[in-house]
Image 1 (cartoon, rainbow, N blue to C red):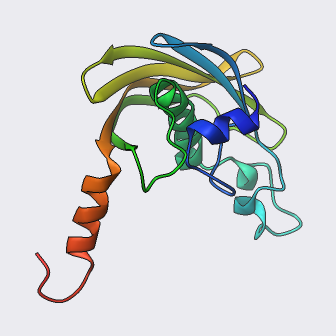
Image 2 (image 1 turned 45 degrees about the horizontal axis):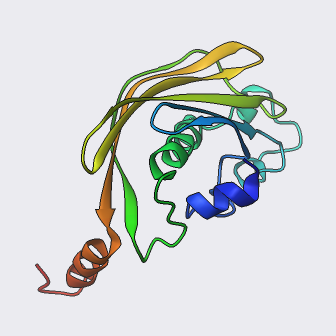
Amino acid sequence: MSISGIKQVLPHRYPMLLVDRVDELVPGERLTARKAVTANEPWYQDLPADATDEQHHYPSALLIESWCQAAGVLAAWKNPNPDVLAGQVMLFGSISEVVFRRPVLPGDVLEHRVRLFRELSDTVIFEGEALVDGETVLEVGRVVMAMRPASELVGAAGDAGGSPGAT
């Protein structure tokens, strides 16, 4: 699946669309996706010209986000929803048993391997890992994602709206 197909499944866009390609997708079972890390990404723009490799480590939060977006492609495959204001919205619930094995640097191509561990009516649980050149850089024990109707969330956000006295 190319980037255009990914955009039909996920609502994320630049600079937060962190999956470039899906190599394998077995609905209800597993997915393998790729993310190429480049020095041109926004999170590197403020580094000094003499920045060290250590300063170029890909942020761990973005490594997790990229892996979770790959999981999101698998979760949303049956019912894609690129519009977060309609249909079902993927909500990140929790993550556990995460191990970072080594830093990821510009030039690395992440291979996200996502496996469906369990699927309930509106919740999915994933496990897997991310590799670079066959070496594991990230292990993910469990990620829980919940699917909720956008209409319920928009209403809740509108009610809370941040105005004084809102409950």
